[in-house]
Length: 485
Ligand code: GLN
Image (tube, rainbow, N blue to C red; front, side, top):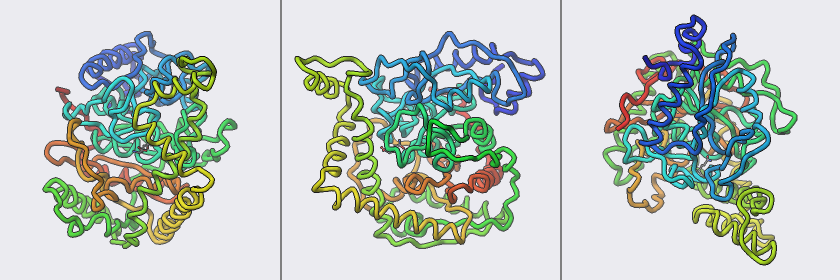
């Protein structure tokens, strides 16, 4: 009998009625972890000594889960999937992990990510690329690659992720699961390794919207250790899942979804966009109003550059403490400058180094006005446009990415001006700190694709409920990969 492929409430009922024990669940999760490690390479650390815990009224008690390896876990290796921290063992738990401990949840592994969350492929982890359980030749996207692979493969019902540009919401789509990042500051980031502080969000990967709501209710809250957190005690996401959406207003952006705009579009892309239109029809059948809205194309096209400039600049500053002096392996050299240089040269992958070079460049005094400050201004314009949309609409609904998961050995595509915005638009959710959730939206070529719903700040209950209703109108709730091969 397997339990880890069930929903949180189902597992909780089974625990309560003593049909299964927490120890048995932990054993199953660990066995699956090893099986998936062999196939998908999804984990940095496997906690083979994990023990079951007491079952209480808390829905998460006694149930195993996974932690992305950029969360600090007390006494447990926490690497950020980087060689610069390959031996780092924190002496404290991230607030989120502390809250899950208090709830009686049981962590069974630490999951692999693109180094420090910087990347969207799940291939730059110091432990090697993560493979997609739906097709092992394909990537999971990233950076929350290991967490997504594990949840999709049925290792446990949920795992922690983090999202600076789309790192929860894109791998969720590629793995056919749910990925949710709530409003900025709803979940404390204390103990999460920072990447770009003005964009970083904690969040969850699950197999249903209700499970995402249940976990987020437990881990959210104001934290004295993170001054960006706010009081969300009146928000109850689980209760918000009513499915009552009649009269709710959704919109999609013409410049992103109109297939006539994509010259030389692949068959896959056209199918993906048609599939999205069918989902809009489902929303209409549920009684929601769905309109098309137009956004200045120039503004949309500026979005990826704005993201790169701001996130690289903030990352350069945030990660300057990685010198090998305080944490991580010591570098070689005759003095501390040489030692730091050696540590960083050997420790970071080329992708990260490139980002630091660009980040330093845009932060240089003479370049700041032209690049960094201008990027901030365009960020503001994009956020203002989205806020204007939210005056008339409950949420923006858009397809995730250009289609299903890409092959791991696919030739690196040149950035295609036409499709970049389709690939990168989720980052606007980070610019504005908007609550944003991806849910499965069927299959193209037998591979899962996703649809995203993004609403206004603090309107998480509404966003979650819209996603819940839409999910209920489709057949992809609680889906898992039946056989990973
Ligand atoms: N793919 C984006 C990047 O490379 C987003 C990563 C993230 O959200 N952590 O920065």
